[in-house]
Length: 242
Image (cartoon, rainbow, N blue to C red):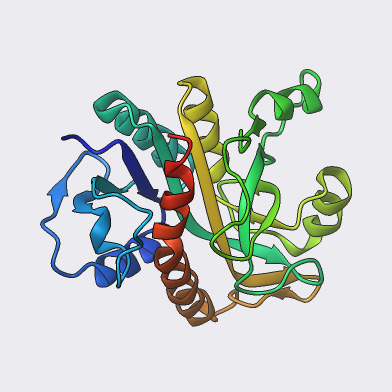
């Protein structure tokens, strides 16, 4: 039976944690990265009784909007999943969100579009996506913040934080969720995006910037373990509506 739920992972650092979490899997290769398939019973120990046994695939997309968009379409074309899940990391705005908070994404917005010939807001709106979460009933398996997540092919810049917060109401940003949500929506595929805050960026700069990459690496390990440990709970919740 082909997997009807696909978990896509973007950044290389995120994928390394996934591979460490499932060390015994048999890995295949795609034009974008590795992938593997497991049974849902392998997600939780002991298994969650509300979660039936069925195959679920993990797929490494690669980092950035280009890889995310291409790989998301590839997954949809190959498997046409009932649910596409993206687990990953994001940077938070200092003073607006805590490290290791989990964002349940209800809207995405690509903010690094610079339009000087027409209406800039119109072009930003073109790639904004509302993520339909009406099928996802409480209670959630973990504490989350339902909010907008902004995306760009770059790290958050300290000097842009006030504007991004004031204009969009943003509290965190990443590189890929805007592309993943947009492609899933264009294909009519149900999508669930969960991103954990690895590090904070504020007026004084970023915690993981200027030679402090270990902050991001260790933050990624903690965030991804948290998301993977709760994945079975999200699938049990989703299964009631799939």
